[in-house]
Length: 206
Image (tube, rainbow, N blue to C red; front, side):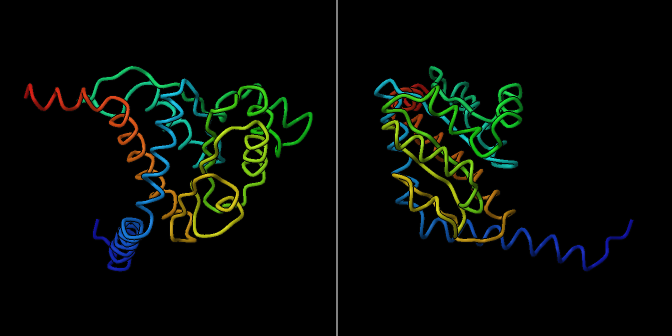
C-alpha cells in the first residue's frame, strides 16, 4: 500500500516534536530528576515504601514503574527488589470505594491506610489537576510522607509536592512519552544510588 505523503509528514512531525520535548527536558529538568531520584533512594534506604497513583495512561505508568522497582529495570543489573505499590491495581477496592464514596478519594484512602511517615507518594498527572491525585498528595502530606509529582507544564500539583518534574508541554501524548523516559531514568538512578557497587563490580569483571 502506498502511504499518503500527509501521513508520512504526520509521523515525522510527531516524532520530531516528541524528541524536541525531551531535548527541553534535558535542558530544564535535570536538577528535578536528580532530586527525585535522590528522594526515592533515600526513602528506600531508610526502609520506606514508594506508593504511586495516576489515571489512565498515568495509571499504567504507575504499574510499570512499580514493577521495575519490585523486579528490576534491566537484565544486566541484578539487585534485590524494592518496595513499590501501584495504588491503581486493586479493582475490587477501586470500584467499591468509587461506588460508595466517589472516585475522587480512591487514592487518598489508600494513602491513609497503606502509607507511613517517611514513605514517598509519586503522583502522575499530565494535566497537573487530577482531583484524586491532588487529594492523595494532600493525604500524604498530612501523614508526614514525602511527595513527588510528574506533570506537564500546568496545574496545581507541581506547587504541592516536595519535588516536581514538570514536562514543558501541554500535549498529553508528548507528556506521557516523556514521563515514561523520566520514569526509566529514575529507576536506573535509584538502582545505582543504592547498589552502585554491583555495577562497578560488573565492570571490573567484564
